[in-house]
Length: 231
Image (cartoon, rainbow, N blue to C red):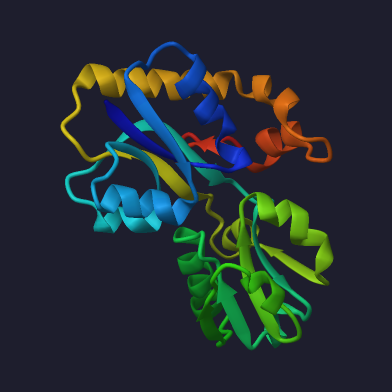
């Protein structure tokens, strides 16, 4: 049984669609988790293949990237946000998202290195969103970002900020394996993911109304690793 862990967000629907419906994979167990849990499972070797936050790659042993597909963004991504009631230069405290690994590191890099803004960092637990008020801001990632973006005066897209200061795209997570799976299995998994991305619009009809998933897929998420990212 091949154990696969993937993120349970809208942006991974094409991947999940390919794994489940392409016909390339069999005898597998797919578990959908938040990014931080995906990382924990791969680090603990509780999964063979996973969509792993890039900041967690350093904690993996003998891993290899198995496909050219990822969760990335060329400019704005729309679902990785710093939300606040005050302008970014007036923020005194930032709550980090318990669902995140890479984004929590990214905001620290952006504020400290590129923007010279010093804040108090707090680890956010379940329900921390209610503490985002006044001079306390918070990182919100995934589907919750769509739901919360209009409830705060200021919203900062971290992929957009990264591009603004570096001129580069950003990769949030990529597909890796850490076991000794056969090359055939790895090739089949790569084919399944490729099939899913190529048929990504098939999943749109199953998503609740109000979310413009076509625009999200087309103009926000880039599924190709750097070097192949489409502007």
